Structure formats: structure tokens, C-alpha cells
Image (cartoon, rainbow, N blue to C red; front, side, top):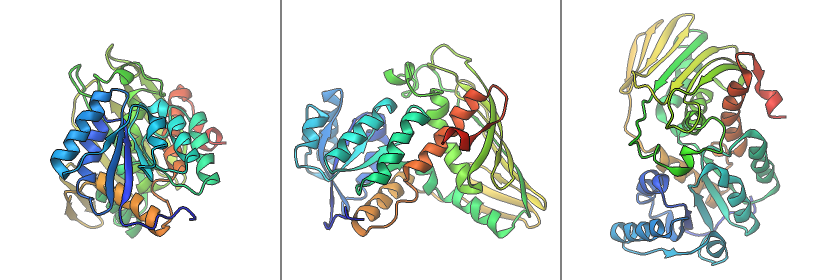
Length: 340
């Protein structure tokens, strides 16, 4: 990669200083001070950027520059990469602007509002020597990679079926629900895709690419902005059939099970439990998957490591699941047709 940075620390600008930047990305970055220096900030609400600068100073002992606009930040010479934590509809135009200025991008998932606009970033990532990294932390998680390993080892024979039920039960006081752009989403499926791309990424880590999807969606509340319930039946290219059901308005227990010809695997919040052909319990480790994705981004920028986990095309495949499910109205929609 021609754009490899030959420096000890990456000068990073944070664009959008809201929940994701404050609560998810900064706790990771403050553990990576040998790799990143936060040199610049900008946010639609300037007060958020100023508060973020104070948080950096109080924690790390230096104060990033606060810029009134994104264009000023990009032209400042203060950054080699930007971390975009924005309303989803801004991901594509803000990434394009950074690449035009010769600046690398790590951008919070989902890739975009829909497949068609997301394709623009896939194409751009092929054309540029700068890195476009879509940050999907579930691809880095130990538990999903361990599940893939168990499947590959034949721990339950040939996998046949996977069943994942996710009941979140967000109320009106939830900090994400209160976000203005989530109340009137411009991205397909509202919370279903915003949160759900995590789950599809995890399932694809375990089983690979998805062949077709059939689904039904419903809107059960008046405060989540869009449809908030989804139930799907789909098939992976390796022949595994799966159900994914998620609801953001009803709270219940999460359920995740994989059934094979010689046993099954249950994933709980605390462990992976294998039974049948062999019996095993694997306790889950505490890990910061956001830290892992920034470490990966750093390696790509400084060593020329191939961008695999942050490839825009992978993020587009995650998003395509929801566009397929929502458009299907119970019929099969083939992912390859949407991605053409």
C-alpha cells in the first residue's frame, strides 16, 4: 500500500463527538496512546467537541484542537486519519471528502443508509491507496471467532441450523433512542440495521456469506422511529439454515444455539457450551473489541497489512441482509442480486 504511514503515532481527528465517540471509541483510544494521538475534533454541536477536548485533557494530559467545520479540520494539516462517528447518512459524503484530501478513514458501522450508496464506498476503497476501514467490532470478538473454530474442528459434526433471538427492550429514556437522527432515521430499517449489522457480521464470521434471506418486519412502538421487530429465515452459502429474530421494543432473554449432526453449541453471556459429540464449557474472556479494531487499523496504516476485517465490501454484505429482509415480504431475496 502506497499510503503506509512511517510514524510512531497516528495523528487522529475525531469527527462527531457524541455517544459512540465518547462511550465506545475513546475508552479504546486512551489505551492506545502509543499508537494514536487525538489531534483534532469537530462536531455538529460544538459544545460536544469542546467537552470531548476537556475529557482528553483530563485523561491524557493534552488538548486536541477544536474546529468549527469538518472542512477546516481536513485542511488543517493536523490529521493523517479521521474517526467518523456520525449519523449514518453522513458516512459516504464525509468519507469521500477525507479521501479527496489524502486522509485515511475509520468509520463506525453501518457503512451507509442503503446498499446503493454503500456501493460508492466499496468502489472508492478499490480506487484509492488510502484506507477506508468500516469499524465492525463484532468481527474481532473472541466468542464468534471461537464458534467458527469449533465448527471448523467438527465439534458438532456438520452444522445444520442456527437460531438467534435478540430482545433488547429499549425504552424512551434510552440514550440511543433519544438521539435525534435515530428518531427520524434515513437508514433502512432504523434500529434493526443500526444494531443488527453487528449480529450479521458475527454470523458471517461463524458461517461465511449468506445466500438468500426471507423476512418479515413490524413496527410495535411509536418512539423508535421505524420498524423495530424482525424475524428472518435464511441460508448460508455452505448450506446452513438459520433464523434471526430481533426486537428493540420488547425485553426478553437472548437465545443463541447452533445445531449440528452430532451435537449443539449454546452461546450464553458467560460461556460457550458444547454438547453431544463432545462436552465442553468455554468461559468467555473480557475484551475490548473496539480497542482491537483500532489496533487493526493502526497495523494496516503502519505496516501495509491487508484490510480484511474493515473492508467496505464486508460491511456492505452485513447491511444487505436487512435490505433483503425488509424488501422480501416473506419471499426469498438473493444477496448476490442486491450486490450487483
